[in-house]
Amino acid sequence: MGKKECKKFYQVTKHTDNEITLFLQKNREEGLALKKVTGNTFIFEKKPYDGRKVCALTLYRKGHDVSTELQVREELVYLRSKGWDTLAIGKPETLSDSRRHVYLIEEIVGSEIPKQDEKNEKKAERRGRRKALSNLVLSILLLFVTYFLFSHSIVKVVSSNFYIFSAVILTLFLLFSFILNLLSFFERVLMLTKKSYLDISTRVTFFFLLALFSFLLIDSFLGEAKSSERVKIGSSTYKLYSDDIPLSLEDLGGNTKGKYRTTIKRENKSFLAEYNTYFDESFGLEEGETIYDNARVEDISYVSYSIFSSPYNWLRKRAEKELYSQDSKANNETILNKGDSFIVVKSGFPLKEDAIKKISNLL
Image 1 (cartoon, rainbow, N blue to C red):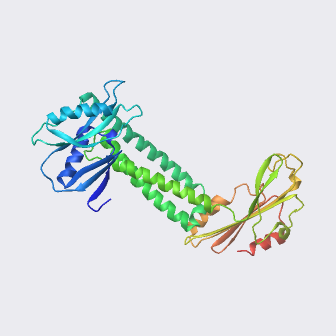
Image 2 (cartoon, rainbow, N blue to C red; image 1 turned 90 degrees about the vertical axis):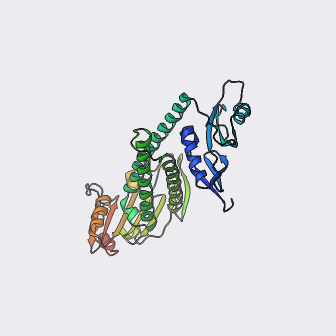
Image 3 (spheres, one colour; image 1 turned 180 degrees about the vertical axis):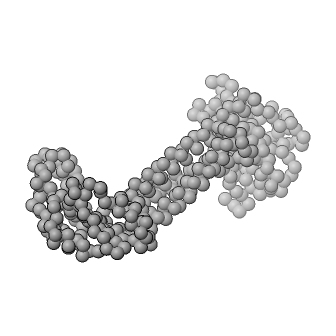
């Protein structure tokens, strides 16, 4: 696209012919002449305004055996006789090719603008209202999705610069989208504003969805373990990890006679906090049994310890609430505090005093 051209997004199926005409005429008076239309994308080229009017007209198929393409050709003959010529012809807007737009320019100055049937104009208005309402509902749903996405693990978010940056950007993006969709709803459904927000709100919502998808895609790669293997146990397949961890089951007096072993290390640090979690499990199964369904209690031995550090007291309290269970005795759970850090220990067996001391030395 040359420097003398520009693109603008405008949802032709969600606006009346009168609204599209005003949109085109405004751009033409500003020195932007319509060159081409592709879907909802209008391509303009910079040209001095020559005083001629432009307009949009929706053509509906009159019969099942007549395509709108043929109907356009017939209508253009009539429109030329009324002083109008073709600027651009839109693509079919339905699968059955029952509707399409044509864009006209005045050939004889002073020609009367072709008028659309009032019934069809009402249909276009309803399509616009439905779009504004659906955009607002989508924004509300996305608010809940984004809140759940980042609030279910505050510890994970605040200990990663990527998550902090993503949370801030996506939240601001979504709030901007929600406000625009709310204004569009006021405009289209409640008729409280005159300025059109439908097109920009739709586009911002689309770009938010694109940003959210990109975040989830990147997050899926960040969450992958560096060292893991797939093992078939009974009728199911599981991932077993072999990360290096500071303290293993052997160091803490755990049973390591299980047939299978998995060790997991996750370490994250941001400008707000640091969060490191380690997990070690040894388990043995009978033929055909799965890890969590029928494994014997005495054949499962595990320990996990999570260290959280932050100079902010309110953040440590929030993290402690998330990581430390209220029913600590039932889960063999212990919390140890030291300065700006604390460590939460969970195990499948009672830890002895010397094991607790070894873990506390990690602080």
